[in-house]
Image 1 (cartoon, rainbow, N blue to C red):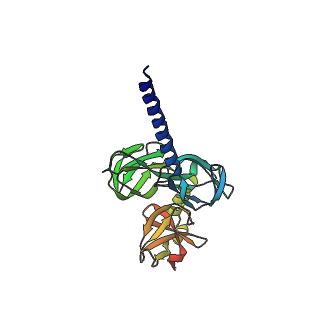
Image 2: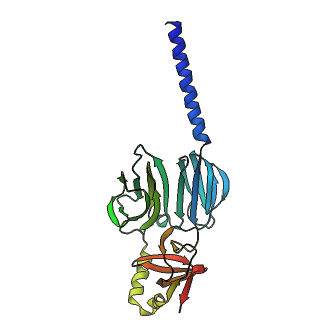
Image 3: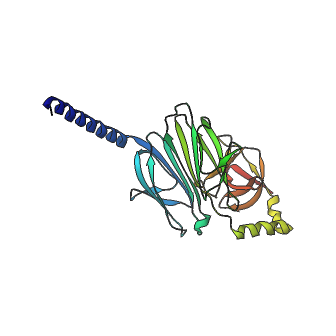
Length: 277
């Protein structure tokens, strides 16, 4: 082979290798954001190293493949762990609710993936178990796994439901040029819960506490989060407005359990809610 041609080939290979190395290095140097929420509180391990407790947020974590492990503080079921690929300049949000019964655990993982469709904001929804119905902004869009090429940029309400399981509602923001990947695990409804609901319908005395009302007080934001559990670490289920009243279902550690929609329950902080006797 001509020495000049051989030299050009070797130079090209060297340049390509250098470019690949530079790209790999630039990816590793880029940062991402991770947010971890659990109920109850859990210890956070990142790549095997203890990093703190939930709720946990780090907006300067290295982008790329990262191993996360969440160990609940109470004697609940096994810890949650997963390898996630963190995309530079985006946020990944993990919300998990532990339970004594693994079938009653629920959670969600939300992250953005860059696409070639710069003018479209996509949405991918997967669910465990499969075939959950997916509603976006009040409109039924199909069954998981679901891939929508464009749902429009901005915030959207996503509701995932399946008979025999507790539905899950998420508020998430989608950006043009990306698709929001939403992985959902639904908690199985238990016979005990169903039996309690039936008993409440049949027994007037047991239903009496629901007549007590909760008044939502003024808040700095103009709305109040409704959460899946009595903790700021629990997943957000909805938002309610000051001045609105809801039936009281249960009271625990300064939190009120309310029925914010027919058939939908959640917890609000007593700091911004008042019990009306």
